[in-house]
Length: 130
Image (cartoon, rainbow, N blue to C red; front, side, top):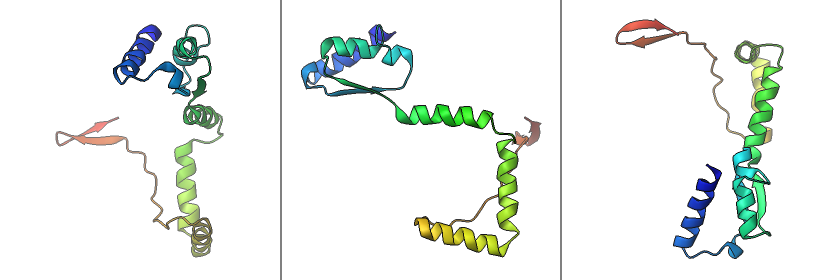
């Protein structure tokens, strides 16, 4: 697979007459097949141009960290969202403080929506339990 990916990138660069020596960076997700130092696509890129900077995707790393952190939360996230909704919705003072915080951060004030777990979906005029 990695050889095929590299060959595809190489073919595209050649079709645009871009030599590897003009390539300064290679970015990809953080999978070993892409960034592996011995047999990943990045290793093939480095063989063509050793000065290329190889960078994994920081968004992908943040997503993995957030996913891992969410698994360790003591409460379910959907319950937390509902609690936050009721905490803010039932108090004018808290709502005012939220508005002040939004103004301070320069964000647009939006209506707070209640998170709802939908367990039934209407399909062909029948309710289907999910």
